[in-house]
Amino acid sequence: MHYNNFLNQTLALVSNIATRNFGKVAATIKTGDSNQVLTQTDLEVGQKIIEAIEKSFPTHNIIDEEAGVLDKGSAFTWVVDPIDGTSNFANGIPTYGIMIGLLEEATPIASGISLPAFGETYIAEKNKGAYCNGKKLAVTEQNDLLSTLVAYGVDGHQENPTLTYTECQLLAEIVLRIRNLRCSNSVFDLAMLARGSYGAVLNRTSRIWDNVAIHILVEEAGGKYTDFFGNPMDYTNPLTKDKLTYTFCAAAPLLHEQLQQIIHQHSR
Image (cartoon, rainbow, N blue to C red; front, side, top):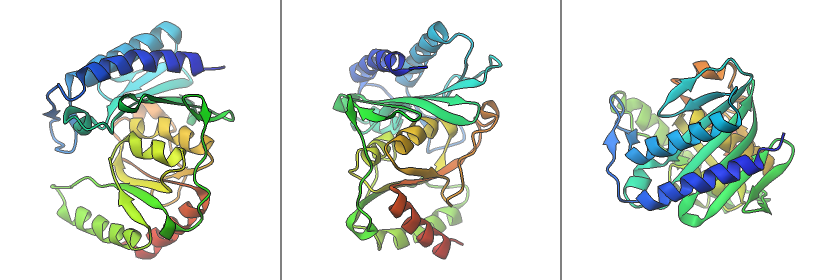
Protein backbone atom coordinates (compact mmCIF):
# COMPACT_ATOMS: atom_id res chain seq x y z
CA MET A 1 0.00 0.00 0.00
CA HIS A 2 1.18 3.54 -0.72
CA TYR A 3 1.21 5.80 2.33
CA ASN A 4 2.81 8.86 0.68
CA ASN A 5 -0.37 10.90 0.20
CA PHE A 6 -1.59 10.29 3.73
CA LEU A 7 1.78 11.20 5.25
CA ASN A 8 2.23 14.32 3.12
CA GLN A 9 -1.27 15.61 3.83
CA THR A 10 -1.14 14.90 7.55
CA LEU A 11 2.31 16.44 7.98
CA ALA A 12 1.27 19.55 6.03
CA LEU A 13 -1.68 20.03 8.39
CA VAL A 14 0.25 19.64 11.63
CA SER A 15 3.32 21.51 10.40
CA ASN A 16 1.14 24.61 10.11
CA ILE A 17 0.16 24.22 13.77
CA ALA A 18 3.80 23.84 14.83
CA THR A 19 4.91 26.83 12.76
CA ARG A 20 2.17 29.02 14.24
CA ASN A 21 3.22 28.16 17.80
CA PHE A 22 7.00 27.97 17.27
CA GLY A 23 8.88 29.72 20.07
CA LYS A 24 5.63 31.04 21.57
CA VAL A 25 4.65 28.25 23.97
CA ALA A 26 5.90 27.41 27.43
CA ALA A 27 7.51 24.05 28.14
CA THR A 28 6.95 22.09 31.33
CA ILE A 29 9.30 19.39 32.60
CA LYS A 30 7.71 15.95 32.70
CA THR A 31 7.46 14.38 36.12
CA GLY A 32 10.43 12.18 36.95
CA ASP A 33 12.68 13.06 34.00
CA SER A 34 14.31 16.49 33.69
CA ASN A 35 15.43 15.63 30.14
CA GLN A 36 11.81 15.42 28.92
CA VAL A 37 9.64 18.48 28.37
CA LEU A 38 6.12 19.02 27.06
CA THR A 39 4.22 21.88 25.41
CA GLN A 40 0.57 22.34 24.52
CA THR A 41 1.63 22.03 20.87
CA ASP A 42 2.84 18.45 21.46
CA LEU A 43 -0.68 17.58 22.59
CA GLU A 44 -2.41 19.49 19.79
CA VAL A 45 -0.24 18.05 17.02
CA GLY A 46 -0.49 14.54 18.46
CA GLN A 47 -4.27 14.72 18.62
CA LYS A 48 -4.53 15.87 14.99
CA ILE A 49 -2.28 13.01 13.84
CA ILE A 50 -4.29 10.47 15.83
CA GLU A 51 -7.53 11.80 14.31
CA ALA A 52 -6.04 11.53 10.81
CA ILE A 53 -4.85 7.95 11.41
CA GLU A 54 -8.18 6.86 12.87
CA LYS A 55 -10.02 8.34 9.90
CA SER A 56 -7.82 6.73 7.22
CA PHE A 57 -6.72 3.55 9.06
CA PRO A 58 -9.35 2.92 11.74
CA THR A 59 -8.20 -0.64 12.51
CA HIS A 60 -4.52 0.23 13.08
CA ASN A 61 -2.82 0.52 16.48
CA ILE A 62 -1.24 3.82 17.53
CA ILE A 63 1.58 4.69 19.92
CA ASP A 64 1.81 8.43 20.56
CA GLU A 65 4.44 9.88 22.89
CA GLU A 66 1.87 11.91 24.78
CA ALA A 67 -1.44 10.01 24.30
CA GLY A 68 0.09 6.59 24.94
CA VAL A 69 -0.96 3.25 23.43
CA LEU A 70 -4.16 2.71 21.43
CA ASP A 71 -4.52 -1.06 20.93
CA LYS A 72 -6.82 -2.12 18.06
CA GLY A 73 -5.44 -5.66 17.85
CA SER A 74 -3.81 -4.92 14.49
CA ALA A 75 -0.58 -6.09 12.88
CA PHE A 76 0.00 -2.43 11.95
CA THR A 77 1.14 0.15 14.49
CA TRP A 78 1.62 3.87 13.87
CA VAL A 79 4.34 5.34 16.09
CA VAL A 80 4.07 9.10 16.54
CA ASP A 81 6.33 11.77 18.01
CA PRO A 82 4.30 14.98 17.71
CA ILE A 83 7.23 17.32 18.38
CA ASP A 84 10.70 15.80 18.47
CA GLY A 85 13.10 18.31 19.96
CA THR A 86 10.49 19.98 22.17
CA SER A 87 13.14 21.92 24.10
CA ASN A 88 14.41 23.34 20.81
CA PHE A 89 10.86 24.12 19.66
CA ALA A 90 9.85 25.91 22.87
CA ASN A 91 13.05 27.98 22.89
CA GLY A 92 12.68 29.19 19.30
CA ILE A 93 15.44 26.91 17.96
CA PRO A 94 14.42 25.62 14.50
CA THR A 95 15.93 22.13 14.78
CA TYR A 96 12.75 20.27 15.73
CA GLY A 97 10.52 17.93 13.76
CA ILE A 98 7.35 15.85 13.58
CA MET A 99 7.65 12.09 13.11
CA ILE A 100 5.13 9.49 12.00
CA GLY A 101 6.34 5.90 11.52
CA LEU A 102 4.49 2.71 10.65
CA LEU A 103 5.32 -0.81 11.79
CA GLU A 104 4.00 -4.01 10.28
CA GLU A 105 4.48 -6.43 13.18
CA ALA A 106 8.07 -5.50 14.16
CA THR A 107 9.23 -4.09 10.82
CA PRO A 108 9.25 -0.37 9.94
CA ILE A 109 7.53 -0.06 6.55
CA ALA A 110 6.78 3.65 6.09
CA SER A 111 7.53 7.03 7.61
CA GLY A 112 6.91 10.69 7.21
CA ILE A 113 8.99 13.38 8.89
CA SER A 114 8.53 17.13 8.76
CA LEU A 115 11.07 19.82 9.59
CA PRO A 116 8.59 22.73 9.60
CA ALA A 117 11.17 25.50 10.08
CA PHE A 118 12.98 24.35 6.93
CA GLY A 119 9.94 23.60 4.79
CA GLU A 120 11.10 20.01 4.35
CA THR A 121 9.10 16.79 4.32
CA TYR A 122 10.88 13.43 4.34
CA ILE A 123 9.03 10.34 3.12
CA ALA A 124 10.23 6.73 3.07
CA GLU A 125 8.55 3.43 2.26
CA LYS A 126 10.11 -0.01 2.46
CA ASN A 127 11.95 -0.88 -0.77
CA LYS A 128 10.83 2.39 -2.38
CA GLY A 129 13.61 4.76 -1.30
CA ALA A 130 13.76 7.91 0.82
CA TYR A 131 12.86 11.38 -0.41
CA CYS A 132 12.93 14.98 0.76
CA ASN A 133 10.35 17.18 -0.99
CA GLY A 134 10.36 14.64 -3.81
CA LYS A 135 14.16 14.49 -4.20
CA LYS A 136 15.76 11.06 -3.66
CA LEU A 137 18.12 10.84 -0.71
CA ALA A 138 21.34 8.93 -0.15
CA VAL A 139 23.72 8.74 2.79
CA THR A 140 27.27 9.98 2.30
CA GLU A 141 29.72 7.96 0.24
CA GLN A 142 32.51 9.20 2.49
CA ASN A 143 34.35 6.18 3.93
CA ASP A 144 36.60 7.84 6.51
CA LEU A 145 35.25 8.96 9.88
CA LEU A 146 37.96 11.58 10.18
CA SER A 147 36.43 13.41 7.22
CA THR A 148 32.83 13.37 8.43
CA LEU A 149 30.49 15.27 10.73
CA VAL A 150 28.88 13.07 13.37
CA ALA A 151 26.00 13.92 15.71
CA TYR A 152 25.71 12.44 19.19
CA GLY A 153 22.85 13.22 21.57
CA VAL A 154 23.67 13.06 25.28
CA ASP A 155 21.15 13.26 28.11
CA GLY A 156 22.31 13.88 31.67
CA HIS A 157 21.60 11.20 34.28
CA GLN A 158 21.25 13.07 37.56
CA GLU A 159 20.09 9.83 39.17
CA ASN A 160 23.34 8.10 38.16
CA PRO A 161 26.10 10.59 37.25
CA THR A 162 28.56 7.77 36.57
CA LEU A 163 26.55 6.84 33.48
CA THR A 164 27.05 10.33 32.06
CA TYR A 165 30.75 10.44 32.92
CA THR A 166 31.30 7.05 31.28
CA GLU A 167 29.32 8.01 28.21
CA CYS A 168 31.26 11.25 27.78
CA GLN A 169 34.57 9.36 27.98
CA LEU A 170 33.42 7.18 25.08
CA LEU A 171 32.19 10.28 23.26
CA ALA A 172 35.70 11.74 23.57
CA GLU A 173 37.11 8.66 21.82
CA ILE A 174 34.63 9.19 18.98
CA VAL A 175 35.29 12.94 18.73
CA LEU A 176 39.02 12.28 18.36
CA ARG A 177 38.29 10.16 15.27
CA ILE A 178 35.82 12.40 13.40
CA ARG A 179 36.03 15.77 11.71
CA ASN A 180 33.60 17.56 14.01
CA LEU A 181 30.76 16.87 16.43
CA ARG A 182 27.25 18.20 15.84
CA CYS A 183 24.11 17.86 17.96
CA SER A 184 20.56 19.15 17.87
CA ASN A 185 19.48 16.03 19.81
CA SER A 186 16.46 15.81 17.52
CA VAL A 187 15.25 14.29 14.26
CA PHE A 188 17.06 17.13 12.44
CA ASP A 189 20.32 15.21 12.93
CA LEU A 190 18.87 12.07 11.34
CA ALA A 191 17.54 14.07 8.40
CA MET A 192 21.07 15.40 7.86
CA LEU A 193 22.34 11.82 7.90
CA ALA A 194 19.76 10.66 5.34
CA ARG A 195 20.65 13.48 2.95
CA GLY A 196 24.40 12.81 3.23
CA SER A 197 25.42 15.88 5.27
CA TYR A 198 26.30 13.94 8.42
CA GLY A 199 28.06 10.59 8.43
CA ALA A 200 26.45 9.19 11.57
CA VAL A 201 24.11 9.88 14.47
CA LEU A 202 24.22 8.13 17.87
CA ASN A 203 22.07 8.21 20.98
CA ARG A 204 21.78 6.05 24.10
CA THR A 205 18.61 7.52 25.62
CA SER A 206 15.63 7.36 23.26
CA ARG A 207 12.16 5.80 23.03
CA ILE A 208 10.34 3.80 20.36
CA TRP A 209 8.78 6.97 18.88
CA ASP A 210 12.27 8.44 18.47
CA ASN A 211 13.28 5.49 16.29
CA VAL A 212 10.66 3.93 14.02
CA ALA A 213 10.25 6.81 11.55
CA ILE A 214 13.94 7.63 11.30
CA HIS A 215 14.92 3.95 11.14
CA ILE A 216 13.28 3.34 7.77
CA LEU A 217 14.28 6.79 6.48
CA VAL A 218 17.96 6.03 7.13
CA GLU A 219 17.77 2.49 5.73
CA GLU A 220 15.95 3.58 2.58
CA ALA A 221 18.65 6.23 2.08
CA GLY A 222 21.23 3.43 2.14
CA GLY A 223 22.33 3.71 5.76
CA LYS A 224 22.60 1.18 8.56
CA TYR A 225 20.43 1.50 11.68
CA THR A 226 21.13 -0.64 14.76
CA ASP A 227 21.19 -0.26 18.51
CA PHE A 228 24.25 1.48 19.97
CA PHE A 229 26.27 -1.73 20.03
CA GLY A 230 25.39 -2.87 16.52
CA ASN A 231 22.55 -5.26 17.35
CA PRO A 232 19.27 -5.26 15.38
CA MET A 233 16.55 -2.94 16.68
CA ASP A 234 13.78 -4.79 18.50
CA TYR A 235 10.22 -3.57 17.91
CA THR A 236 8.52 -6.92 18.61
CA ASN A 237 5.20 -6.49 20.44
CA PRO A 238 5.56 -2.71 20.02
CA LEU A 239 2.56 -1.86 22.19
CA THR A 240 4.54 -3.14 25.19
CA LYS A 241 7.62 -1.07 24.36
CA ASP A 242 6.36 2.46 25.14
CA LYS A 243 8.35 2.66 28.42
CA LEU A 244 11.51 1.00 27.10
CA THR A 245 14.75 2.95 26.67
CA TYR A 246 16.26 2.46 23.21
CA THR A 247 19.72 3.23 21.89
CA PHE A 248 20.75 3.69 18.28
CA CYS A 249 23.76 3.92 16.01
CA ALA A 250 22.77 5.17 12.55
CA ALA A 251 25.38 5.72 9.87
CA ALA A 252 26.56 5.16 6.35
CA PRO A 253 27.57 1.46 6.26
CA LEU A 254 31.36 1.84 6.27
CA LEU A 255 31.23 4.55 8.92
CA HIS A 256 28.91 2.38 11.02
CA GLU A 257 31.52 -0.36 10.96
CA GLN A 258 34.25 2.05 12.06
CA LEU A 259 32.10 3.43 14.88
CA GLN A 260 31.32 -0.06 16.13
CA GLN A 261 35.03 -0.80 16.37
CA ILE A 262 35.52 2.30 18.54
CA ILE A 263 32.47 1.55 20.69
CA HIS A 264 33.42 -2.07 21.36
CA GLN A 265 37.06 -1.19 22.00
CA HIS A 266 36.34 1.55 24.51
CA SER A 267 33.03 0.66 26.17
CA ARG A 268 33.05 -0.36 29.81
